[in-house]
Image (cartoon, rainbow, N blue to C red; front, side):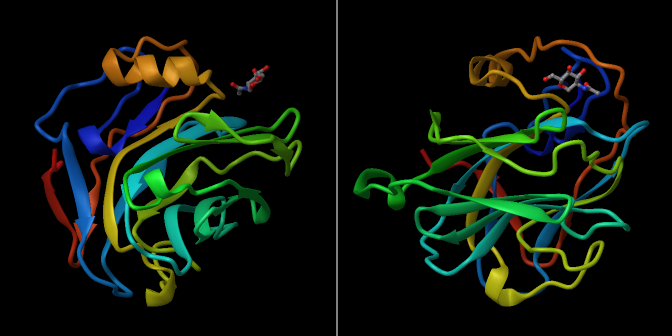
Length: 225
Ligand SMILES: *[C@@H]1O[C@H](CO)[C@@H](O)[C@H](O)[C@H]1NC(C)=O
């Protein structure tokens, strides 16, 4: 079980080995629209991914489209893309193919923090999207595909090439926190528990231990309470 945990500044190679750092309880603030502000993390793992779960929390007042999580490899600029098309509509792209999920963005949440988890399983192609811990009807894409083990994860911008090809009109403006990625399709109850102690199943995936880098105008601050 490998957990990519940007908000804790660690990329763990073993289950249960999550180091606590002073980044817990903090958020990346993307203070204004730009074509360069982003957070980047290089992925370099020992084998491709057949299953994954990505979760994050964000807070924004944007109504135009924007990228939430962009993973690009040399072979495929949209290996994994979580993209907000408009309020109440999120798309998940895997290996260049995409599905759209719609959900009621009710008054209580549209102006507050939104929690999103997306998962995908190669064996069936089934994708799940959970918004504020509520599942949406499952969809399918890219059955049998493998997600590249080498590439760049970018937060705040959508990659049209590895680490570049950004468009200000797809940039994220707002706050982003608790960005996690697991190499398995995990039950949401496990995801919740993982925030506390990260005791999840072990796997043979191992990845280089790399820290994220902030590029351009992105500020790390404690979460507002
Ligand atoms: C991916 O998940 C399926 C079932 O969900 C499992 O059988 C398979 O072993 C997993 N693959 C890897 C490489 O972990």
